Length: 235
Image 1 (cartoon, helix red, strand yellow):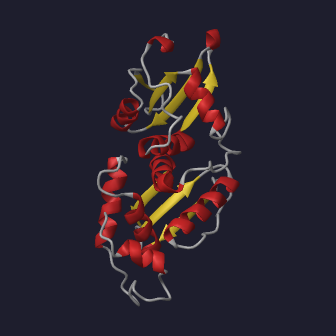
Image 2 (cartoon, one colour):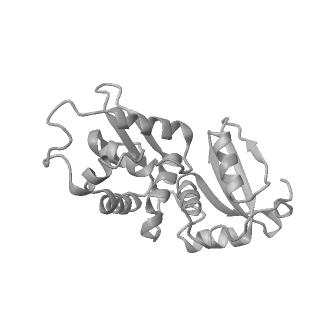
Image 3 (cartoon, helix red, strand yellow):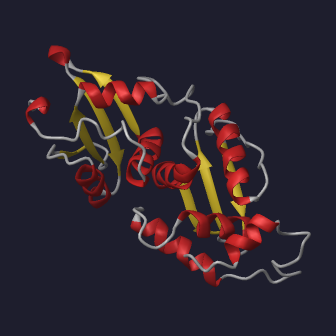
């Protein structure tokens, strides 16, 4: 393994809340890890199938660490930083976090950036193959994390607190469909935000979708917060 400590990085990246920090934190909660390497090195790792996106994260952290190809074809960015390692722990990160993570205390103005980062790491943004309606799904090994995220999403968008689902042999998830998914996409993927491009492109296609029955302006379908997001044309 290369001498990670010799490569530059913004060691204080996770100390100050910014839209970029919140996004990277969310992505790390979905597809990252921390560990201690040999010679007392403290490692922060990110894994993704999207090489270019890891390059963006590396640039945001002012890092020059190499991105390597794993045996499964995915890519891995490993950053050596005791300070980042420690700050992630303070924010709720753990070495074996997938089953036990909890939603961190994210400042309200940065919540959507954290959620977008998490979805870009471990979520689906797509059109249902059968009915052609928008779908956003969020996965985690921790049901508590998903319960907390669903509550936070509702408080910011008014889409309701969706129930965590779990099928045998599969990870728990929460799912938003139809007008709720469209509302969530408009809230999350705004122009100028850092995002995984392929998911942002699909999210923006949601803007063209309209329900075929009742109409989204129906009070039975939408809340005031949802209508505010749907009529703001921010995507």
